[in-house]
Amino acid sequence: MATQADVHRDELRELVADALDVEPESLTDDARFIEDLEVDSLVALEMSVILERRYEVKIDEKEIAEIRRLPDVHDLLVRKLAAA
Image (tube, rainbow, N blue to C red; front, side, top):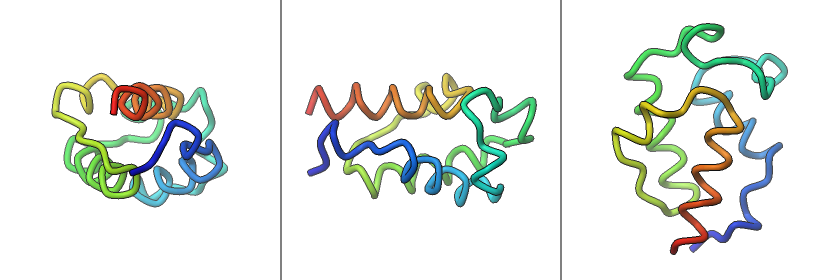
């Protein structure tokens, strides 16, 4: 199982950028998924599946809906791994 220390920002940026089909450089900490990157619910779901597999955590729909930016994803994963 992954640990908190396994959530490296650069790797996370690459994973999320790949899931969102955007260049990693465009995925800044300030970039909003919906407003700036035009992420829809299906893409967000695909992202959550990729993250669940990589970090061995369960992300529910409510948590997916609360994710707005890359730092939100990082914080969510760190919390989930700390609780595991």
